[in-house]
Length: 380
Ligand SMILES: NC(=O)CC[C@H](N)C(=O)O
Image (cartoon, rainbow, N blue to C red; front, side, top):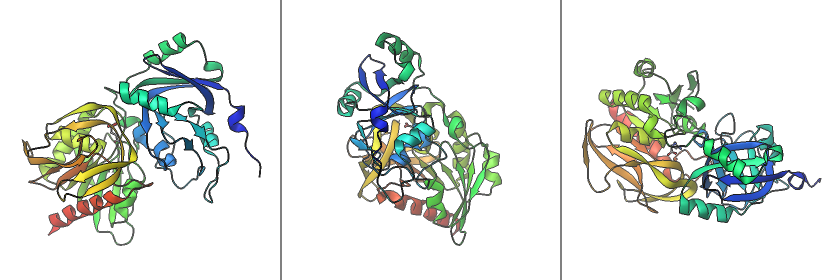
């Protein structure tokens, strides 16, 4: 076996936060420069699913797990056609990937896709900094891009902020495509792609749903042209306060009382469609072990998260909205953030986290069955 020396051969690199704090390490993946919002993920597995989740577009992901890349990269696990993170930060990359499914190393894959990363920095110190000061803009510079810190800081300060970013159209499909039902087809769902992960239509297909995945720009007429039994709004990058078009399409779906399900960005859009606000969390929830309570059953589930914004809805009362009574159905037990909404007078609900999570945990998979029940109820 050849022990790779790639990591050792890599160029010096520096990570500069917008408040001036800097960390020095070595290049990881592509050499060059990149910018984004610095966020940390606490997942110890599932790095391929993280990297290819379109919701991470324009974010530089800091892995709190110290050892990343151990199982290499395969062509089966990605959630989309490409890596979407704008940069990647790891403490100690695996020098030798080891897994029967591995086809190449993570370092090679990042390089192949032109994703600039940095390794060998104190990711604990960086994470604590982000936890105390909040998510902020960052730049990673390696090779010829390295310059004095004042120059690099000025470049970071020129990069766009996440607040106010309207990004769904940049990551969503341009053309409608269909994911066929597995086995007997029972339902048709129109899924609005705001940055959808591949596993989401798959989880529906497993339940006999034929999924028509529509571009983010789809109109209400285009949604109803597929004659849907249910409408789904996906996860996606950016600030939900900018998502005016999907909000108005969703309001049209709610007026028609078609069964509706939303995940993550889709939950924020339901919040807005009902008249609630959204706000930016200090540093967000990203990882695969977040405790959420389903208040409709009292059960606690361990769940996968990736959100930097949240819905501002009252936890302690039923709200009267334009579309009838609504309540907070799920809440995060770490910080009481709203993690789900449901309407009481019509078949619509959403969650802020990821029941489709390919890398697990799968505690929340029942939510897809809930969506099926709503569509069954409509037919009865
Ligand atoms: N995964 C998502 O859909 C994220 C939604 C939104 N971009 C947020 O950060 O909160």
